[in-house]
Length: 286
Image (cartoon, rainbow, N blue to C red; front, side):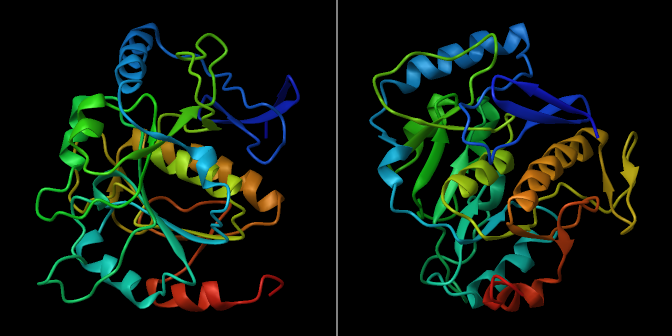
């Protein structure tokens, strides 16, 4: 494993990306340089989002995410999400990403089962993010958003966002602001941002649920996994980055599990959905 140290931070290499030890008390720095084409878009987004009335993540000082599920709209999400309804909000908090909110079926009068999200998190800077807005229902949970998020998405979202800043790049620190925004290591991936936020909010037990982009049919360029499903190499690379974040969490004592359909993680045990409640009900020393 390759390790690099830089300004009181340390990093491990994952598929060409340096993944910071998010558990260190050092000032976070992302040593992976942004592409020049991205900088302009992100700068425009940050300038536009300064006009949106938001709240700083430091306003969430009392929030405790000791037991947390991070979920996306991965393989089988439509049917598998229902297991979350059996897990009490008082025991386990939740953060949804990507298309999980748009496809959330546990809200409204016709919902068979009901469950709320603690947060929905987004950092997508592109117009494609508009597809993540809820259209089939009117449920808009608390939202945690990067200052680089697509402004149109935030304008249409019917709840005031809590903003965070991505850890500054060595060549791009972002737009200066008077607000005291929390810095999160997000690698332009909402799952990474959610993991970073979880650590800042004292996570002890963490599960990734449906955090994959797996599919059943063979497609050009896709990689067949051990479970018989497929993912593209870019999606596998994203999981490798997440896995290195989980490596740092485990070194700091966080118990991590995965209930998804992507490639196997080295730093998270796989559990079946039926074991979620018992996973969170265990004592921390078990």
